[in-house]
Image (tube, one colour):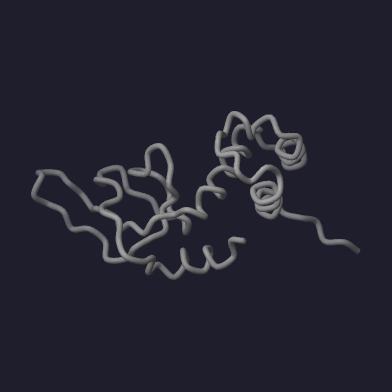
Length: 129
């Protein structure tokens, strides 16, 4: 008996096999493979397209750390771990490859570091083609 593919595996296949250079979510939304994946898993095609583009941008991720809160302008206790943050139009509040994201009172992602040190991000980056 064949194993049924998961949504995650489907997004992975589309991201790296169906015109992998396309990074515009509106263009990706019209791909037949994206429409099929959305239909099979009961998702909105815009949601699937965003996931595909996010995975494609993860290949060019930059090492960044969380900046911490900036309530008074002087309080900035940033994180110590550098995560892989996908490049994009607004990387300040983008979700990292491992799923980490700035909180609602956070100043977002800070400076670009030398290398990614987050173990979960490193494992995810190893699986990228």
